[in-house]
Amino acid sequence: MLGRLEHVAIAVPDIAAARTYYREVLGAEVSEIVDQPEHGVRTVFVTLPNTKIELLGVLGENSPIAGFLERNPAGGIHHLCFEVADIEAARDALAARGIRILGGGEPRIGAHGRPVLFLHPKDLFGTLIELEQA
Ligand code: CO
Image 1 (spheres, rainbow, N blue to C red):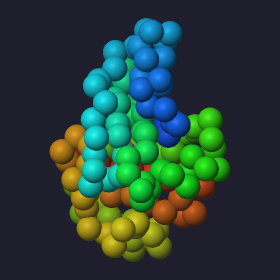
Image 2: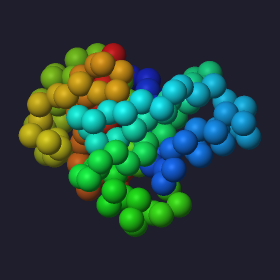
Image 3: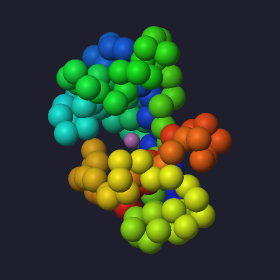
Image 4: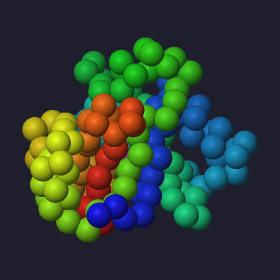
């Protein structure tokens, strides 16, 4: 079911500073900062040869990463994103095995314009997992 690792997401307290650090210190190719108001985050994608890093910053009052950053003020790994060939088939198969799908189970359009879903970390060894339609 799982395809390639699409990205590893890291929540950061200052996305502009993190973007500069990845570009200047780590020598990585970084995108512009993109506001995602429907998700309550700002994103930067760092392109690596084999996958991407998604830097996540807070946007607005009810950002879904605000609580995470309160618990992890220096930032930290927030989720992993795997590609799946058919997101609705993957959702149905996982739900049938008792894995909880966050947000009501309907795919939303993610940062790449493709449908995404999030799986409950308590059902996946303490790790928030995002599935993205390949
Ligand atoms: Co993501």
